[in-house]
Image 1 (spheres, rainbow, N blue to C red):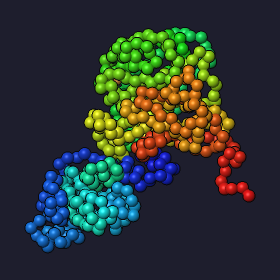
Image 2: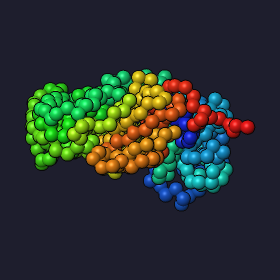
Image 3: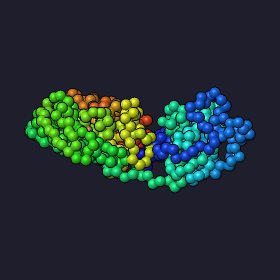
Image 4: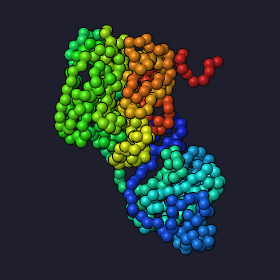
Length: 497
Ligand SMILES: [Cu+2]
């Protein structure tokens, strides 16, 4: 996840929330621990009784209830931690107090198997919170008034990585979670195939050639791909990358398309190209079982920049897992020449495990239906286009064209390049309409695209974002690195005398 950290660090913004949100590992290891005598009663109505009753092992013993330090029921904890909520740090986080975790946001807590662990939770923001660890049936809280403090002691039986979090609705999602590591932390980092489609990997302009017959061969491949540092998921791809290949034809071309579904696939796949006039955009002819091949032919009648995607049910699932791309149908005479062209697509990723989990993560059908992605990505992976190998590169004085599409499946992009203005923007990728000029942000719907062009006047780093900027913190960011001489007439520090 260091890539995402890097990117966000560069922006400074909301660093705390980011840290809480995506850097903490999760493990799902049910039934590995037992609570000490305490009966956490997760179903109990928390407000009905003094909260201390929930947090101390022997509810009948007032002495134990009052002693909220290290000892509960005569037992001393082997390790003890104090976490305070929010406070000066702002935002929905736990902050460590004392010891090695002092001042750390959502600190990683550690213990050895067999230890008794004491966690004291103190309210420092006056908002209701608790601390929950599912595997150990730990629930301490609620603490809902300023300086209210509760302690829980429990035994950790088995090595593993667990998550502590606040179960107040929305608080975990907002960043109130961290890791409890029992024993030696498992090496969970997973390595998968690189699936990021390089943004400069697209065919050259057709330079006004005459219509012809074009062959397009696509292979549906299911790949264990790299989602983030240490994190992999099963992608569905066209030709092994997200997005799939950039298909470039011209108005009037006859396109002969063949779709092969890899023998290793577990799912059928297909293709719907929005550039097609005909049912399903080709999906009616291309439902393809693993190891099989289908084909169809279409004539490109409408110039424009179009999304293509898999259209095999559940279509949203196949799209979310990476099966989308762009097809450009150049108008007669081609597009005006530019110095650089780039290919960028936005998508959402829905995983069972929260963002930041390392290891293999699983697709979540529930989160897909609820439209609650864990990640937003350009070109398939977390902060993919900030990585050295995959940044967009250009030079001062050059004209840049971005082909931008949204695979989605659900979220409209407010596409923006921090530090630049689109000299020309083609809303909805309507390339035969006059462009808008001098545009800051373009709206790109799922299953839609846009084409923007701008000249670069000043060197430096420009940042591709969806200006719904919460998504940046879930992985949606890219860099355009521009080299060249400074241009103080346009941009410089300070004010001239
Ligand atoms: Cu598919």
